[in-house]
Image (cartoon, rainbow, N blue to C red; front, side, top):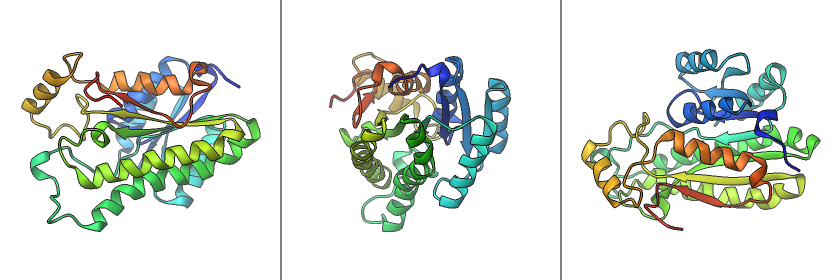
Length: 254
């Protein structure tokens, strides 16, 4: 079963700014209804929803809170209709600043848990809240956001990368279980993006180095990664599930 993107209602976690906002704009551009989830970025999420028009709205919830997620989904159903697509983009507070990263001798388990609670726990909470709607229609699309640091940990962001590695495993096990319901589950993994709030602390010299090592000769933008997310929600990806698509201009392969 497949449906055009213009016929979909999409929930984007962490959708108020950065990559999430680019994904929201991409879906809105194609005519989808867009539910913009935020935790603290109310002003940005409300402004984005207003800019996208009547088919978009902002909804508050901490994705690590199962009850808050359930309430949010109920609100989305009432306002926009049952979500057909989940894009789990929410990220625990993080800054891609190699000089300030936690080194192994100082890294705590709590830091890894914090990232994993948002990456994997947030995905779990959202899937559980959306599953009845997916099952009722025999259709659903889940897209998680990963990282090419799994293939090339050029900067060892231990907590962030470990959480995304766990999320890739969960993406694949969820694809196995949800497939019989007509639900696909895939991951889109970016590299360093120019520019999001998380990458704003990255020195310009690092962007230049990445661009110089990339076959396309430039750093990927949030808008370019957002278009890859659209693919997994589109009819063209109806037979693709459990996959990890790396969108980084060819910096890494795999």
